[in-house]
Amino acid sequence: MSKLFETLDLGDLQIPNRIVMAPMTRSRADDDGLVGPITATYYAQRAGAGLILSEGIFPTAMGKGYVRTPGLVTRAQTEAWRRVTDAVHEAGGRIFAQLMHTGRISDPSFLPGGALPVAPSAIAANGSTYTDAGLKPLPTPRALETGEIPAVIDAYRQATERAFEAGFDGVEFHAASGYLPEQFLSSETNRRTDRYGGSIENRLRFVREALEAIVSVRGGERVGIKIAPELGFNDVRDETPLETYGQLVESIAPLGLAYLHVAPGARAETWHELLRPRFGGAYLAGGGFDQAKAAALLAAGGADGIVFGNAFIANPDLPARFRLGAALAEADRSTFYSPGPSGYIDYPAVAA
Image 1 (tube, rainbow, N blue to C red):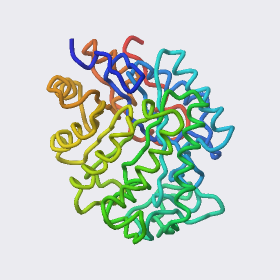
Image 2 (tube, rainbow, N blue to C red):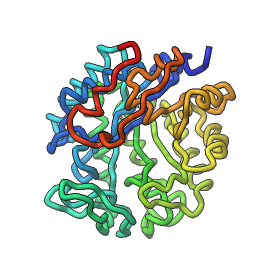
Image 3 (tube, rainbow, N blue to C red):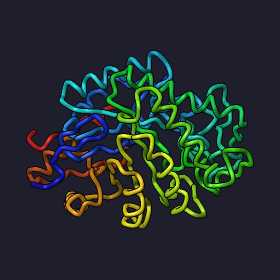
Image 4 (cartoon, rainbow, N blue to C red):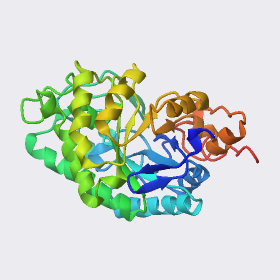
């Protein structure tokens, strides 16, 4: 039997297979950051995954970066997510909440009072963001004052508390995709001269302190982290990525996290070989896998689980299709971020 279908221990949670659903923004929340019944249906349809990682959820109102993305800030948002987690659990699944603060990858129209996005340094990303008024260039963010950073870190702790209250099985800290944590990590986006900038040790401080705050809620066994060395998404780069991420993983290893989720943009084998032994716990590999490549990496001992993204959009029963050797459906990219049920909950299971 392929190792894809073996159980896996992630902290104190055992998952029934090693097929993990990637966190994917789908833009189906309302203007108040509330998810609705179709989101509960969407995730419940995919409960055959060993673990579902939710779409990115903003942990503070200043962390929102896209239209119709959901939050875990208010009581109403928490209760809305409870209906989703109940549906997943009733279908036999497990789901972690991915906490995502986009930092400079945002627009004042998404933020309280039309505020400027915040970042480690006042450096604009080269790119644009989609708003209800169409594409807009990303603005130059406001650099966080040193004294503001503890409140941002504590927002992750509070969102973690709300995630468990909402019934999530755990939390994933999003430190990839050019969002706020990776902006602190990377030398080209972090030009600070205080204790959060300069040396690698200082640049990784925000990530470590945020993780410590998250872990303080229920320990590390229900907490994971996602990183994406060299992916370069959202115009983020680091001058010495091997050194930066090597030190980062060594720094967080003592926290006893449930897993390390790595989606490298290049040199995947190099990154897996460098980071997996430094972490010492469950290692989830992501980034362009099909069934054959995933099974081969697991068989070779290069990872403990495989994270699949787009394949889960059009194939809600992806693990069952893998078992049967069934053909995979193709997703309609035009509906990835559109509102409503079309292209979201209307993909049939293979037996339908």
